[in-house]
Length: 83
Image (cartoon, rainbow, N blue to C red; front, side):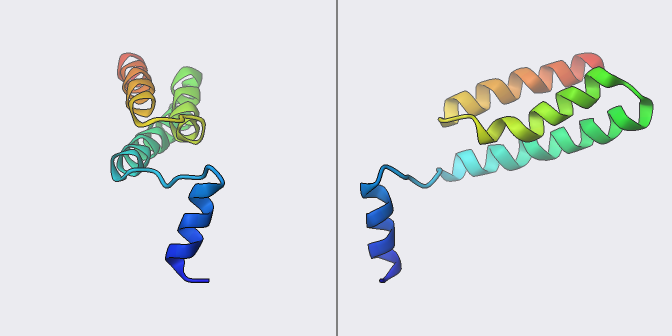
């Protein structure tokens, strides 16, 4: 099976690949979450720690790019407010 046939089969089953904008945002929000998590653990600041965990994990549940950006910006604002 060629890669294009495999992609066509996956799309016929309802699976789609994420856009580059989605992948970029997931990477950036994940990195910001990792920094917030490490800073929260180092300073024993539980709110910052949990916001970092949320930033690292929420891209797995966001189904669309606009939802990813909206939730990511809101969580980053929370990190900024608690830093």
